Amino acid sequence: MVDSCTRAFPLSPTHLGGVSLARIDELFQAAWRRYVEQHPRAAQCTERGIDGFYDGVPMHWMRDWSMPYPLVVASAQGARLHDTDGHEYADFCLGDTGAMFGHSPPPVADAIARQVGRGLTYMLPTEDALEIGRLLRERFALPHWQVATTATDANRFALRVARAVTGRPKVLVFNGCYHGTVDETFVRLAHGRVVHRPGLLGQAGDLPQLARVVEFNDVDALRAALAHGDVACVVTEPVLTNSCMVLPERGFLDAVRTLAREAGTLLLIDETHTISTGPGGYTREHGLEPDLFVLGKPIAGGVPASVWGFTGEVARRLDAVRARTPPGHSGIGTTLSANALSLAAMRACLEHVMTPEAYAHMERLAAVLARGLEHTIAGHRLPWHVVRVGARVEFVCAPGPLRNGTEAEAAHAPALERAIHLSLLVRGCLIAPFHNMMLVSPATTEQQVEQLRHAFAEVASLLARR
Image 1: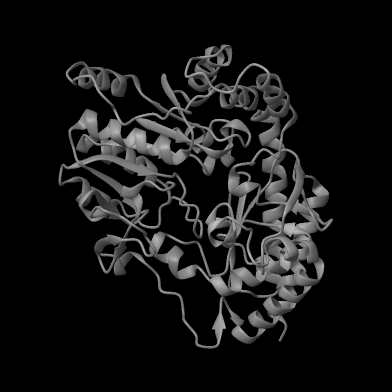
Image 2: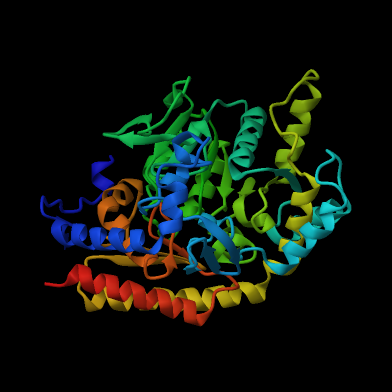
């Protein structure tokens, strides 16, 4: 089944993404030397690791950048980031979506400053909470909401509710998905079997016992998996991200909604990345009608926070389950969830930052960026393609479009991508370290887009040189 719906990309012992391995290494080494020359202060601070931290960094993902050693951030404002070596970067990574609306948007910064003198956490609602419930209901068209600290927590809590109200044990995910560090989603298809994803550490349970996995855009496989009658919830992004981006084919998401309803299975839409689509996310833009909805990272302008919402029917069934459940720990919620600081930042972000005007600016400049990348790729006859979802733009170092997670994995070109990332960085442009993702924020300027387009064109020219 997997083979019939995937496309193999040609492998070569001498080329990757249509570029010779020798040329990729040449570009990478040149960028490496340039980075070392540009960052002597960072070398003093981080080359041997920051004392006291495992692996020399506060959070191990900070080692995933292609740079020889981490730069040290001095400040960031809007879409500009400054390091302690005195360099300014046009920031298109934006904290890998956490700062999607820019660093320290003024309304959020003002709300934080006001709240600091009032206390940071009480485990009680605030005046901001009185407005946030209404704002979430109006924006995302679901009546019931809860606040968590991360999208991982929100997804985990929503899946517990789905299991509780359906009485079913399993979740269904799409191959290549990413939903934070939720255990059940760290599975993949390998030769038609559900297995653990590579690199998983310390997992005590057998995750394939908790999840079913099918390929994105494969309606027949989804129908067959749901026919077992044991799936509590389908959890999906509307577009596969955090990989080589995969768009839904026409009618696929409608089919997901229809098949889930027919099977008595709930549908959870995770919009943590695809909120780049518009003020109500991909869900509101395309009328997806989920039973459960999750949004993390940017909802509070960079302050750790997430939200998860659900329908009146889910609430009714949850009430019934809770009524027959003895008192005790539900396993849902943490002490710092919905703290006063995050609520203040979230209200400011929803009211004053995530506006239709901001999204119009983001959409326009993201389209300019995508067209510029496409022009460069075509001009150098590189076998790559560009994908965009609202303000989120990615270039993929393989032909496209991609149809599913298996194709996305095959299209990933780590050595080529890290050479491009580091080469862009030393030219003053920061993009996401995990894949080729670029975000346009409300603070991004036309000049910054042009800077990135020019840097990309220069790097592509070096790679394509015959």
